[in-house]
Length: 519
Image 1 (cartoon, rainbow, N blue to C red):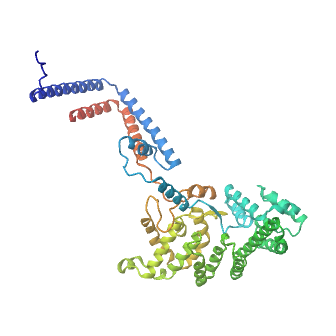
Image 2 (tube, rainbow, N blue to C red; image 1 turned 60 degrees about the vertical axis):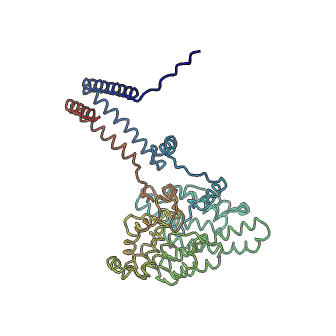
Image 3 (cartoon, one colour; image 1 turned 90 degrees about the vertical axis):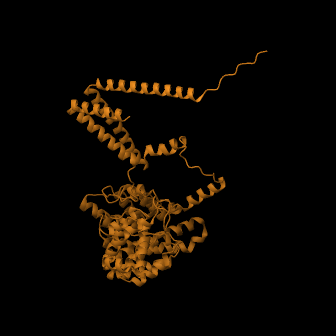
């Protein structure tokens, strides 16, 4: 019948006594540990310090090399990527936001995929002649101006433009079909002569000889005139029977491509030989006769020829037709529009005067046009301002890339120099573009975000001796700087320990004593 004895609740005095006892025990353990570490460090020899610094320098060097390799290949820091992707969620650093509906995310991703431009390679509208220009450059300098990738793209273009399913009906076309696939230039030229032996009116054979065998523009023009005579005759025959079958329609399409190609190259020959008005007339007639072939960008040839004539009103008329939002932009269109607006104010433009009184309406329009052009292709100004050396333009270009910038500046630098003050206005204003564009380039200001694939494609198109322009310049991540500094610092300590072992041991012990005293 006795009641159970309940445990007495602890008083505040007993709790405080237990806490003090635990604190004293913890302090004694810490002091004992520090004394043990100090005794251990006092017994170490200089060889230990040397081995320690060498090992740390080697490990940090390996980390630095791996970080540099990962950055060069993928453009990001491996340590930062791992910390953001794996460590931040573990420590709760990820931002908490309500999940978006799956349908919305799918629609957003689909929209972004449609809006992001692909790195499509285009044929250069002003590409040079293989025999008369590219080969002559190689003979003089010993450098190959065209890459294998670029020439392979041209071979594919030739097979697409100049061949069709009905080639088997004509022996000369069968030979030329094989000629376009040949890698050796001499084998292609030999095949062209074989085709002419079978058919003296083989237009594509004359085209190949004009492009590759002719060593001057005059010789190339002679071959193209023969190709034009043969091509017009074949084109008329194809027109008369194209509706009979799908094969005849394919043959008409091929003969149309040949005729347009020949007329365009004849116009370019006239331009190079100084007969500019004749070249302009030929280009206008070609655009009027075949209006559906606007994807060949013949208007860019016309713009360059009109600029040479200084027919700026005609240039503005062409821009009004082709500088449209529904058409794919190009450096030639954007920078020519900027040149015309700069022409109106460049002669009297002065940075000092503009800073005092502000920009006029015409000057604002010119600066905005330059900013628009630079945002489309940021590589062009360095070539126009001769901050980078030019090379021969490739046969294919990547819009908004360095290859397009080389091709544009190669032909249009003289037009900028001809207008007094235009390059000065460009020099004073072009760098301001980059302050307007968001960084990182998740979105553009006037155009789609700048594509990240241009550097890889430009390296394939441009010769190896040319330093490819890269935008935006990739900044080295923090951990590359950190590991490089750590490796250098530990290597320096290893060297000093090896040269002055006793002094470095004293220094290490002094640092350890100061650290322990601070703790």
